[in-house]
Image (tube, rainbow, N blue to C red; front, side, top):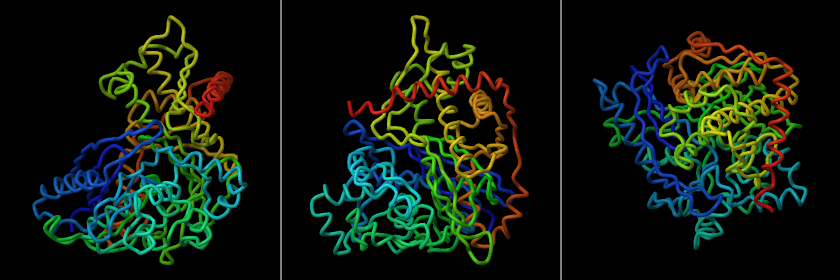
Length: 500
């Protein structure tokens, strides 16, 4: 077998990437799909369109191989997390639009849980905070608002899953209803210590157990693709939420190693080893992966900080404000001015994530004068991505007690040199960009490859990891602290706006 097929299903596009034994990209294909915003704060996807685009790119890369699917050793899947799909088991048709992780329609229900004093209890079991970001309240909303859904779910007629689970269902022709522990741990329904669905949480959120998928290791053969899809069956052997997959793809196998992925959102994860860490600074504790670093298939945990709007901020400048025509214009436009002119953009379009967790915050642009230009706004948008990450980085160091020495980076926006230099400046530590920035897809491929013997162990994977560039901080410490303080002033002005 010559290749591993990685399905990288993201928030705005579906991709398929073929990797060879050296971890190099052989073929890639990508298709965007539609975003739906039916009400303020609501974000939806068409789950069938997700499958159609993923199926199309998968076939595109495999059909170009001399031996087709016969040259593919395994499939690994990395996916946008928390996005909630509910479908009919008999027809394999969704019963409603998928509710995207960015969706805020259940923010009030989460606020009510916090007011009832449930936040600490939920965090002790799940490592998460009660927030509309996660799947549980999204699923409860669907069960309550789709006619007949709750009764049908209780009778076992409906299936719930995040996007990984939906893809596995479609790939196997409905034979396998499964998710992995890294995705399950993002639901608010999964106990980090028992590594099972938690009956007490199911009662709290009023979720029938019959609707839930089976939880499997992140690395291990869980089924085969329907032969009709690619011309031959291919083992499905790797599953991980996109951010956990990127942590694995960055070879952050040892406790204390950290990465940040710059995609639609911005997500920093630090490997904390064999035990979950309870955060005191509003970080999340999550399963990193289950297996495959040793024969015991032990579970690795991570601390995570989430920034909701990173690449999506650039999309907003392109599609909303229309001050750029494409993302490639961002770097040169932002670099055309030396600074932002004291302009700060807080991109809280979907609320604020770590460390503020304010679902009622909204996007705010402050500090403008008559001299402010679109270049200043573009630079402020890039700085906002780096500044939000700096907030997460500080919280992570405080929680872990580890002084982080560097940050490994990946994702589309990590290719922007100006942004990476801003990131090093605002962190005060080096930023390391790998030679292969497709680490989310690579991580899923590695999980699948280890499960099928395509690669022999983590040492082989780590040996192939190499840096493309290292960005050293250039900003003086006094100026760094001043800019961080000014940023926090802007954040305070964005908080609670939707409650006013």
